[in-house]
Figure 1 (cartoon, rainbow, N blue to C red):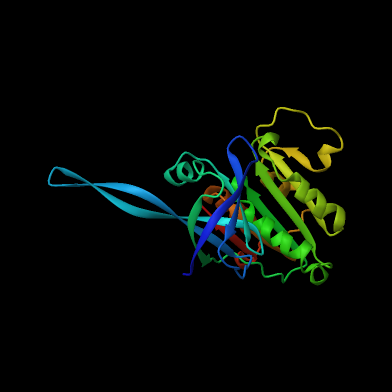
Figure 2: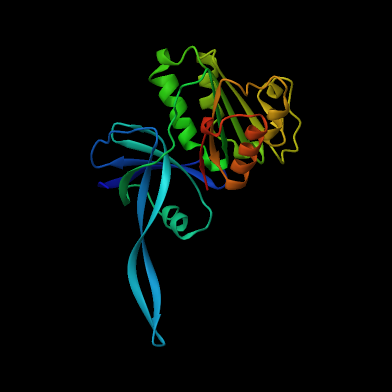
Length: 249
């Protein structure tokens, strides 16, 4: 695992608890869409031995999926969940240095079927956005014949912060569509908004008799319970489990 030095260039608040971190890295990386970034976080661990407390300096490792990388800049979306690593990251200032390492993971797109259905919840969306950027900003000509659908679930509209990215993809690519689901949104949507927004969980869309279950690949990033629910729905419709690729936490 190769290690790098990084500096924080920007910290941009996206929602009440999500911020965008833009890092400058010490050398150019060869980015692949199934990779993530591991950040080393200094921590003082307290050990108890023979009734004595010993403080030991350790490094905790935390992985974050990358939204995009351009030259020497990396973009991350991080949620402040009040844990050790987020307390450390959200206490940082511009130009502070971070120790990072580069790793591979197993979330990659096969691109075999006619329909590609991407699904994500909350802050688990970066790898999906990363893949869509690869298609629509880099390798579009290879995927123009495929139909690509993106489904996203979050509680309220104020938690949905990347709408402009999806609008751009949709306006520039006729084969792309998206639907955003809000489980606790109280506001009523306009007729125009209803084209893209809906209340309830995105598993509701599977009840549509015209949903393209056949000739489709399914990609999901989110919680384990929701992953299990989607997999059960697909099995009920005789979809081969190999057509379902996921990264669940």
